[in-house]
Length: 72
Image (cartoon, rainbow, N blue to C red; front, side, top):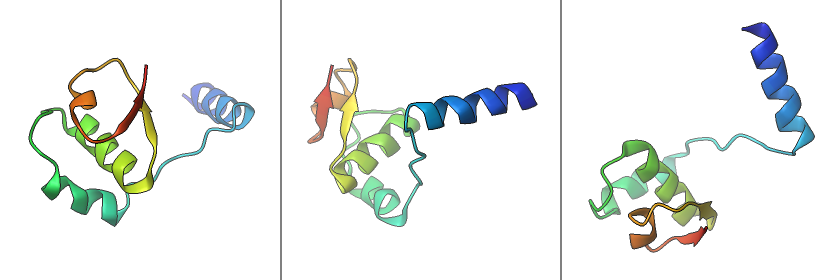
């Protein structure tokens, strides 16, 4: 388990990947989000992208139904 964690940390640093915290504004946006997508994880990602102006890399057409920037 420690090796897996060490590898994870190494790869995140190597590729300049940082964690995205689950902030209050993104959680509050959930109540405004239309119920198009049923996956709770995807709904949080959509809210974070909307709140912070991020682009989601996806081929999921349901996510593309929201007012969020996407990249295939």
